[in-house]
Length: 178
Image (cartoon, rainbow, N blue to C red; front, side):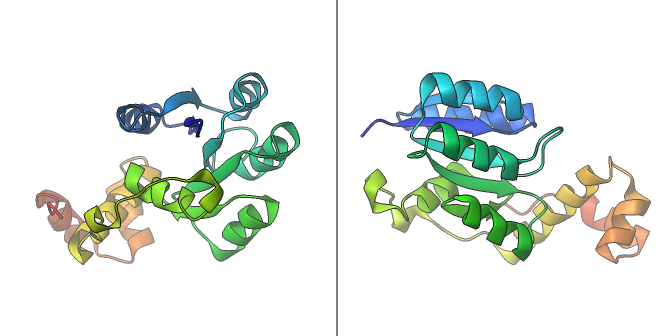
């Protein structure tokens, strides 16, 4: 199987982290930070798989799924987003995405989603998977909301329905290891 993958995300650090992880697993990796870059790569390189961020500046991941289907109908796509909702998940799958994952997702989560399509013939070691603890999931969610609020503790506390001091105490603790 041709192990080519396109990573589309406007967060450069996240994109680079995924690129390194996929490269270490033997994939040829292409990256794009927005819709236009992604369309160019899909047209030129014809990757077999794509990891598409739903929310990007300019055209969205949903628009990219539709455009990618026209350019390369065989491309399998998994959608990642920090802004999950049933409506957007349904729309992404209707447009042709294989699966929908909430951020933060790691390479193993993404490969497990691609493994749902037997045509890709991906081997995924399910024994290595361990779900994050509830404490870890909470920590990641709090930090995602805080990032979305540009570090504004008061706004993040309001969105999380927490008292500001409670949020500050949670942030002072070290992140759970698992």
